[in-house]
Amino acid sequence: MSSPQTAEAKPLLQQSATDKQTFFESVMRLKPVSEYIRSRQLAHAHGEADLDPHNVTKFKSTLTYWQLVLLGFGNTIASGIFILQGIAAKYAGAGVFISFIIAGMVSLLTAMIYAEFASRMPFSGSGYIYIYSSFGELPAWVVGWSMNLRFGVTAGAQSKVWASYMVGLLKLLGVMVPAWMYHVELFGGTHVMSLVSIAFILACTLVSTRGSEESSLFNQVFTLAKLVVLLFLLVVSICFFNFDNYKPLLSQHHPEYGALGMVIGATLVFYAYLGFDIIPAVAEEAKNPKKDVPRAIIHQVLYVMAIYLLVAFFINGVGRLENFQGETAIALAFEAVGHPWVAGIIYFCAFLGITASAFINMMGQSRLLYSLAKDGLFFERFKELDPIRHVPIKGSWVSCIAVILISVFLDVEELTFIISIENLFTYSLVNCGLIAMRFREHPEQRHPNESWAWLYLVVAFFFSVSWGYGWHWSLILILGIIVIALITKLHLLPQPGLEQSIKEQSYMCPLVPLIPCIATLSTFGLCSGIPYHIWLYFAGFEIVGLIFYFAYGNKHSLVNLNFNKGLINDAPKVEQVVEEIELSKGANNKEL
Image (cartoon, rainbow, N blue to C red; front, side, top):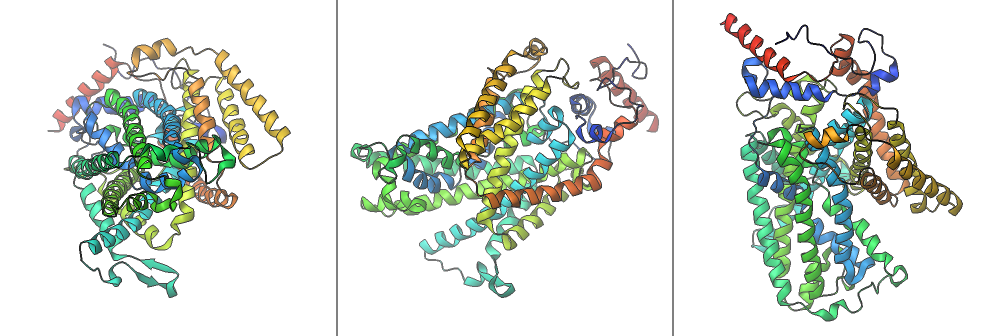
């Protein structure tokens, strides 16, 4: 067996590690997948407490396939199914259930791409590490910074809504909550603080710092209760179903849209599907991440699509939802047939959904900060895990403080648009990232054909927003022709590492690059209706992130530091890993 010191290794980027790297190389350097694999193999084979007893940086692997699926349920099925369905019905009419099918298929395309990445890289970090390994450090930082915004703002917004639902439910039960507990005006009334909301955020943080098993149990209780209530609501809807509510199928509120109204409805209800990316975000806490995480991602989207389809179809049969006020259409539909008590059930189900979703978003933010810190792009303290519970306690409490501040000071309505931009932006990058990975013979060596994936990403963005913002038809036509030409070009390019990937991966996305291309167009297209000033807010947040990256992240990046030390090599052979383990054990025995 060869020694690790003499094992042959090939430079990552066809460049000597002693050469001085340019600025572009330093910000676009890939994260070697071999580093993730090597650290995980060493930790599993030897025990991380022995390798570094003072700084535990490995999660406990406790989550099963069904626990991962329930995490996805908890983060996806919230109040959106009740609120968005009524709004979308104004455009889709009785065909709103078809809108859920269309949105679900778009979500499924991106989920299939996430599933292949999860099979290739079964590590915590989700879209952040996928972009790091496919496009490079700076794009990965932009995605990670954006995901951090999404987790924090979503949890902050949901905590406010949770407080409102809690107060409302207690009123239904005859318990009056004092106004000072949920409505405290600050700074002359410009901001409102809710002590109930803050108490909820603190409770979620306490649960999440108990450990992954306890966090999973908390999510399971609320998610299963939510599914039971949804099932009961579905049964009630079947009892009062009337086919006459489906005549006609298309919208009478906006008849000018015709069948296109169902596509517009799909754009609105798409946001009810967001959340499956929490599953790869906790991949390192799964018992069998390489197999279970890809399956859980795809199956969770299919399960959610089936639930949404059934609920949308039968509830619209109770009362034509477009005839009622959008946000409360479902409750009003039951009132119209003489059953206002169902509104209380809807209230309770939405409350359960928000509880699980807000908790999981806070949990996801601390795991994301852990991944950023582990790569040296964020403050080092955030990669420290509790030696007993194996969770990022410091990161969890910092996230807690940030979410509390968001719930008090930020305008949630406009930031909701920013959350949508972040999700769709991340999904689009990951979609094209898979195309780039398929062009490589080795996952850590760039290929010249990857430039076509970058070009398609840019052109697809401008084409998608061109028709959404009403650009001149000639420009839209030119961009459309270029998009078709690029998709054709991408299909003609060879995928040299495909056969080897099929042998090694537990899941491979079919019809690549067609599916990633369609998914990219779809997600960018959903961005096209967002107001211009929201794009400016998003750009401002990203500029702050870039300033932090160049001031701190780029200087402390482990990938760049290792390159400067000449440590960036191909993935170590199994024999080399085993010998490193034996050498480490021997060193520890000598110390003892």
